Every structure is written in C-alpha cells, then in structure tokens.
Image (cartoon, rainbow, N blue to C red):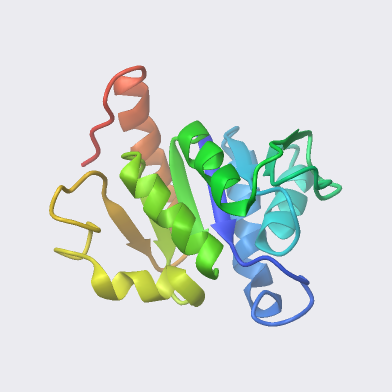
Length: 184
C-alpha cells in the first residue's frame, strides 16, 4: 500500500513540529513495519521526521518534490517535479492509496482537499494542530467534505487506532485494486 504523509514543513526542532516528534516517529515506524511505501513532499518538518523513522525501520521513502529542490537525506527516491508546491501535491495524492495528515498549514489543506477530490481516504491525527484539526470542524456527518461523499475522512486519536484503520483500508484496497475504491 502506498501511504502519503502530509503536515507541517519547517525546522523539526521548532514548534509546532518539535512537540509532534513522538507521533511522527511512530507513524514512520508503523509504515515501515507493515511494508507499506511512504510518500511525502520529501522536504523538512513532518516529511523529514517521518522519513527518518521509516528509514530507521528499513522502510521505503519516496519524495514528491517541488521545483528542482533537493529532498531530505532519508529519501530512497526523489522525484523532482519541476512544479510548485500546490501542483506537486496533486501528484502526491494521485499516487497514494491513503493520506495521513499531521498538523499543517495551507499546503496540507490543499493536499487534504486534493486527496478527497481524488476519492482517496484521509486520516486526520487529532490533536496535531493546523489544518488537520481545523478541517474536522467542517465535516459533513463527521466524515465528508461535501455532499458528494467522495471519500471518507477519518479521525484517529493515537497510533493504535491509526494502525487498525490502515490495516482495514489496506484490505479494502486489495479487494478493489484497479477499480473504484470503496471504504467502509
């Protein structure tokens, strides 16, 4: 399964990223231990920390980079798109099966909306701030971004809930690989 992780960019040792290091590392470890492939924007912040953790546990990291920017040192594959931040985000969400959101500013909001528009499930890790928490306030029936109900937006409280949900989604994806995704 291809798992996209989105969230804050910036210096990992500064807030708000610094206080999220534990959950970010657990997400990277979870992805690696389940032999899923990690996709991210490939830069700093959440992207760098989740890639670092994933690499520590022998995971595979792919960065979808804006312009001709070099990615973080933990990437196995760097895809330099030549596109701006918003456009490269669409490549990211089109490539993955599911998106996990940790905090984030406007770029993260764009990725959440892009994933939803492309019928990809989005998992919001509650309490991580930014658009991950803000977007929860506008959900219809606590799980959709509009009345078309294109894909579910899931909210998890911790790594255990995240793992359970990802495994359930993986089973659903495997059953419909190549067709229209349907998630419970």
